[in-house]
Amino acid sequence: MSLVIRTEKRDAFGKNASYRIRRTGRIPAILYGEGQASLPLVLNKKDVIQILKSELALNTLFKVAFGTEERDVMIKDVQIDPTTDEVLHADLILIAMDKIIRVPVPIELVGEAYGVKTEGGFIDFMTRDLIIECLPARIPERFAVDVTGLHLHQSIKASEVALPEGIKLITEPGAVIALVQMPHEEKVEAAVVEEGAEAAAPAEPEVIKKERVEKAEEKE
Image 1: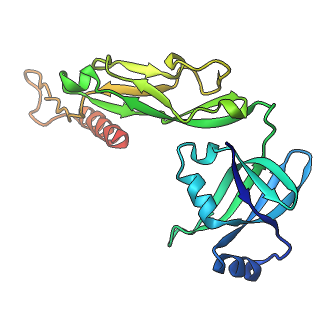
Image 2: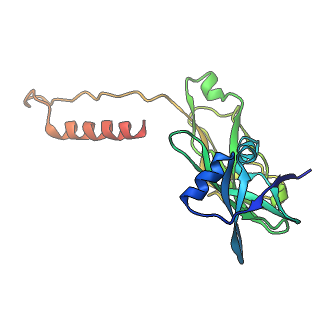
Image 3: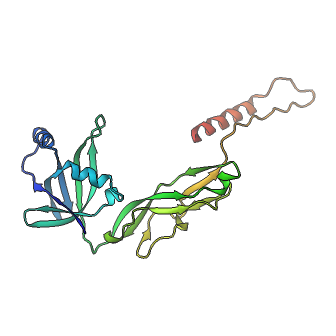
């Protein structure tokens, strides 16, 4: 059964009006739709938080009901107070259930890689979402990616993720999702002094060494 949230149209605007709305446990919102004028609304803050904490989060499909009307929508964006983490405002987007949409879907790594368990490596989780296109009703909660068989220096790319029927991958197919690497170890190269040369190390190897250390620090 689709989630239905009761709402109402908003006719008061500005900071003071928004403040009064928030004092009642609600938040101002705007519904956007292609080819339609934006519609200011008022939502119950608890309803918005419930959606954000659900499995699909921002990809949750639900209905807003006002008067005798109901619209299929998703949350496009939310404004959060950086100090209190309170939800201040929400942008909704009108959804046509028969039209393909583009959304990010989170990736969940499953299992312990062989390269981590027995070869001393660690998993570098590089791409945490896949961008896909599909009908709204087909949006998955997540993509489970099994990393059990990965050895040291092996990776899984976006193109290797099994997608359900009706879902098109938009993320670059070559994007690395997870890679098994060795922990960084600083390598100190010994300077080779030729017979008859001065004992002091030449400047050039020191410059190269410094550049390598800086690059290594950037990767950490």
